[in-house]
Every structure is written in structure tokens, then in C-alpha cells.
Length: 276
Image 1 (cartoon, rainbow, N blue to C red):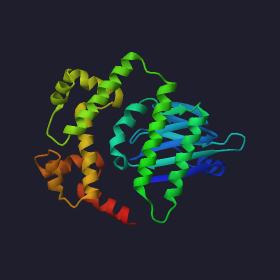
Image 2: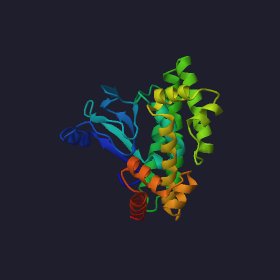
Image 3: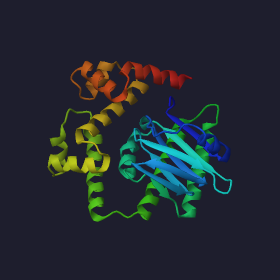
Image 4: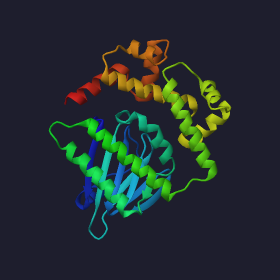
């Protein structure tokens, strides 16, 4: 996906068309939120194949292998799809990964809540159809939408005490990370701030995101690097230094390994995308 944000709708006719296409498990470089109003979704994710009936919410995090097949029920299918790059709402991305780890699908039992979700989605879609799109407004609406979904999930799927403690510790880690990720701190620094061992912090991060602390720190740095590449004219060396990398060449190497593009290639692609 070239755009930072995209919204679309799948009806019964589109579901029939999708069913006729090759549909192998795959992953993508963006986040995808699916909200089912009518019909059902056959979803292979987290190495399981499940069928979920509307009303539902399904969230697919970036790089997660999955396969979706929308289906009509009694001839009806209506599913909203929202795709966005993690840098579109970077302050929310990590929380999304934690919330939806091994819990991609959610059936929404509260009709009032679901009606409010659809209202927000409709507002986003209407703004997206404007000749001059206000992406700041869409970002705010998407943030509210995700907050409401998170609340619904927590009400329908209470966590065990152990899971709750892990989530609290992980949330505290993310808060500290937001303050210090631009500095060249390692795992020990964050573990000490949380009054735990590096091993325990790594275990928590692996349990929630299946990533080490070091990987999460680097991902946060690279998310900010992408934001700076898009929104500023700073040189790549200046951005590298600002994010705690001693050498611009090492930063570029890490960026390309994680993103598949050099910082310069990413900047050029994003600028072309935003101009078009």
C-alpha cells in the first residue's frame, strides 16, 4: 500500500469476486482493521482458521501472516476495511500489537457500541471522499475508534491477574520508552527503571509482542525516523544522530534491513505518495 491511510467497503458482489481470486496466506506492510456489519469472515490468522459472524471487528497487525475470505449470509455482506501505516498513528501502534496479540477477532455483542463504531467509520469515509482530505481529522477519528474497540474487548475478555500484570508492566515500559528512545540506552536501562531484571522484561515483551526489548526499541526509533523523513528536511545523518545512532551508515543499514528500503528511497516514495 502506497498511501498512509485507505478505507473501503466490501459488499456481497465484491465478496463473490474475492472468492474467485487466488487467496494464499500472506502478510503486508500496513495495519488492517475489518469491521463486519453483515455477513461473515473466514479468517486464517495466528495459525488458526476461524469463521466469525457479523457484527465483528478483526485487526491484522503489520507483517502477520493471514488470509481473509469475506462471505455473504442470506445474500448480504457489508464489511468495512481500514488500512493504515503504523506511522499514521505511531503513538498507538505498540498498544495495538499488545491488545491484538493472538486475539485478532472480536465479536461485538453490544449493539449500541457497534452503532457508534459505524458512525465513526462513516465519518472517516465521508472525509476520505473529499477533494482536500483532512488527514488530521481522520487520524483523530481512527484513534477514537480504536479506543472504543479496546474498551469493548476488555469488557468481553477479562484478563487473568497474570496477564493484567504483564500488560501493566508492558504499558509502563512503553511510557518510559517514549521518553528515552532517542537516547542510546540498552535493555538494562529500561529494566532498572521498572525495578525488574532484563530477563523478566524480555520475557514480558516476548509474551506480548514476540519481540525482544532491543527489537522494540529499534522499531520505535525507526518509526520516528520515518516520521522525520516525511515531515522534515533533515539529512539522514542528522536524523540518525537525533535518534542516538553514532554513524549514519549504520542507521541506514538498520533502516534498510527493517524496511526493505534505504532512508532516501523511503523519503522519496512517501513524498511522491503525498504529492499524488
